[in-house]
Image 1 (cartoon, helix red, strand yellow):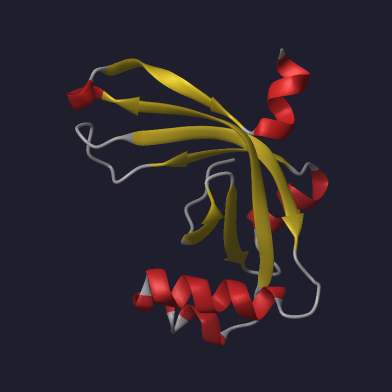
Image 2 (image 1 turned 30 degrees about the vertical axis):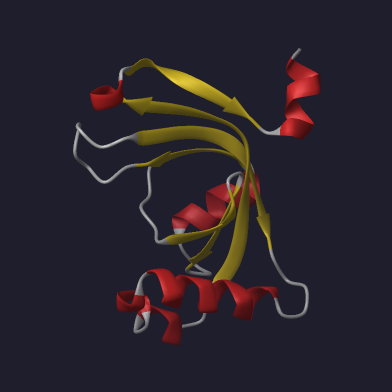
Amino acid sequence: MVAGTFFAESDPFTLALVLEPTGRTLTNIRTNPQVSVVVSSGSPFDAYLQGEGEAVELIEDGQPQATRTALLAKAPEVEPFLQYPLVTLAVRVHRWRVTDVPNGWMPGRELVHPEHAVLSA
């Protein structure tokens, strides 16, 4: 399944996002939290990232509001969407593949989360 969403990053390996509680994307994530993500402007001449990781629902005190605040700071145009009931998630990326054609990163370079570097070594 492919879905687009706004996200805010809390560190290089964690993306925070919100999804509709009755949408197919959330249903699929609840069935299988292993996800792949692409971060791209849509231009082939801008760097883009492909990642794999795990999606986790955030329900602890303050986490949903912190995610909404971070999303508004990054993309104020999402404000009307945030008025609806939403589920807050974190995507914990295990590894990124970064491709940047203008800077010669072709093939892309792999960035592995430190916790997963030991496992893949």
